[in-house]
Amino acid sequence: MFSFVRFEVFRALRNVKYLLFLVVTPVGLYLIYGRTSDSALAMVAMTVYAATAGGLIGSGGGVAEDRMRGWLRQLKVTPLADRHWLAGKIVQGVLMIVPGVAGVTIAAVTTGHVHLSAGRWAALLALLLLGSLPFALLGLSLGLTLKGKSAQIGIVVVFFALAALGGLIGSGTMPYALEQVRHYLPTYNLAQAGFAIVGGHGPAATGLAVLGAWALVAGAAALALWRRESHAR
Amino acid sequence: MTNTVTFTGVSKSYGRVRALDDVTFHVAQGETVALLGPNGAGKSTSVDLMLGLAKPDRGTIAILGTEPGRAVAQGRVGAMLQSGGLPADTSVADVVTLAVRLYGGRRTVAEVLELAGLTPLARRGCDELSGGQAQRVRFAVAMAGRPELLFLDEPTVAMDVESRRAFWTAVRASGTTTVFATHYLEEADAHADRVIVMAGGKVVASGTPSTIKAMAGARTIRCVLDSPDPARLLALPGVLEVEVHGDDVTLRAGDADRAVAALYSSIGGVRDLHVSGADLEDALIKLTSARN
Image 1: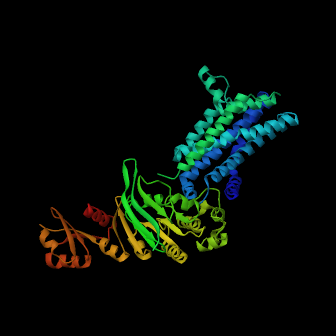
Image 2: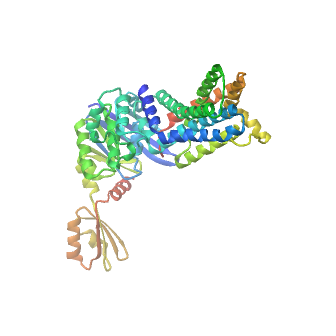
Image 3: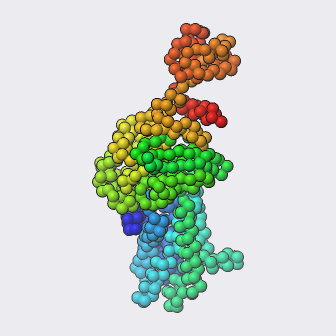
């Protein structure tokens, strides 16, 4: 079980270029937005941005590439159990997310002078860690669904849609219809839960339920797609 | 004798393409069997089905006495797939170590590296390998678990002559029951105990390499003659078939040397003569159409 997890961890750590990209973008955006708005709220928004980017582009993009290269097919003919594969990919996905979240948090504490009590920090970090699971799983599902070169483009499109509709980037005001849709998005709900913790009240149960549902559905989809995955045709 | 592979009455379609049509063959323990045929013959589909990567529409497949997916999950099968590849951001040693562990440590990493001729390349990144070297890494993955049965789908495609020889020496040394797909007649001839010829999703011939070689070894002779006479051409020594379109003549010959000599000596006026080597694809298509 641990051999595949370990393999994926070392692989993720070796991918310095990618990790840098996943850290530099949200930190850069934080340094731009954080000055003009509430720095604690900007911090939350950018950590959610980092989680979305790490899960979708980092993890999902990696799976799409493995698939295109034929590595998934190769793995399929070894005794690697389905659940061990999923465990390895979840750990790898979370690893793709942690550096960005940590980078934004450090930037917020050092340049944005964000002060939170120890309890709120603990709650926020736990939320972000658990809340990044739906993104890692969603990335996996996308990477196993979209094919070839269109996979990378498709993933980036979904990423920007989730980030914009979730209010992480852009003006934050949108037409009524989209306003309704966003309540069901993981980006919006994770950001809102983070805002609530920073503001000193607990996150809404409905928001957490939406995140949990995304994790379950995306996880089940990823496992089903992996089981079906075999043909590079 | 116990069969390591039984493939009975198997059909498989992808959409409207019938990849396999009622195919039956067996592989006995200890045998090395070649699946020989042109692209699209159904070789890779057969290998996929034997590995449980796809399910047959009809027919039954048993591998090592159980169903394919189970034999793979038990780590009793090793495979080198045609479209298999290596992951980015890993070294040769990383991939081989993973494979050894996935198969439960039945061999040491050093042993597997050595067996595939990868010891000097262990620290090399998988993205920095030549095509032939990458093939060797995939061979190492296939051999990592001391498999009872080995599948090799077009294993030597990217290899040079030297690596090809070393590769087959390693396969033979392992003594594993082996099924390999190839479109090289010479490769089947040199390394298989038995050859199963496939074309258009069917088994069109099966036998020892020498039998198959005799069937598929015909050459094609093309030339231009003034008012050619098909009956006279067919009577030439070594000629099996004659096609005439105007002045253009196409002969199929079992013994091209004799046929060409006779063409010059007893017919004459030969222009634009061209002999093409054992055109396997052609020969296989003939074999298929002969059967239907």
